[in-house]
Length: 142
Image 1: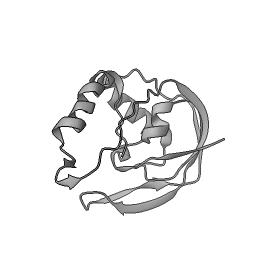
Image 2: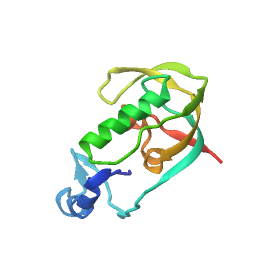
Image 3: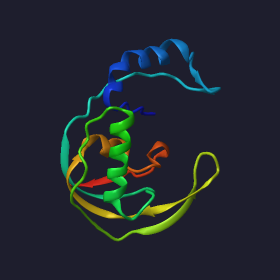
């Protein structure tokens, strides 16, 4: 399981490590786990990328999806992401799925995009409002 810490919250990484080592006692919300290791990777920078969206996002308009997420992160996590100016997208497929709380989630996947200046954080975390449940995952083309 990976936890992604954004913006100035990266300063709390030592507290988060202590939380898992000392306070969880091998269980989170009654679900047992074995803490094998904790590794920290700092992901900085931007990347020009061609990608496929391989899980659900809330809209066909990926530029709007990404820019809405950037506004949210900048306001709540004190990040300094810049809005995406140009995003070329093609094709999509509308789908419905159930989220962790058994609610229907409507969105799109299978969208191909090409972008200049995608934050590398988004490649790891996904994009859109469903990324908390694995949504908006990007498959980068080399």
